[in-house]
Amino acid sequence: MYRKYIKRLLDIIMAAAGIIVLSPVMLVTAFLVRVKLGSPVIFKQKRPGKNERIFEMYKFRSMTDERDQDGNLLPDEVRLTEFGKKLRATSLDELPELFNILKGDMSVVGPRPQLVRDMVFMTSKQRKRHEVLPGLTGLA
Image: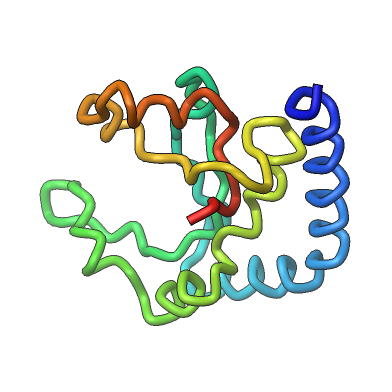
């Protein structure tokens, strides 16, 4: 009962309160991302969630979309800007995940969502992380 109802209610309350309280910070961050990196401001990435259901996780962009002459994205370390490094260091890039919590894709506390491509390397013990919702923050 706790996981199904009370934890979900607490997630909704905390995410909604976080969005309200942090909305000025999110607006300024979105504006700065738009000015420094362009559009889109929000980066969406597919991640495995509860029961390995794939969902789109939202983050503020921290990298450019620079490509080589063949149209392939440059390596992450080349595309990560100084502004992006600051966003990541302060975890401001993760504020849009509050909307994932409201949608029910994530929880406030839970294992951090891994990349889809890493699922093939997970042991059965590691896959147990998908028995609960992924979280904005983990226990570790």
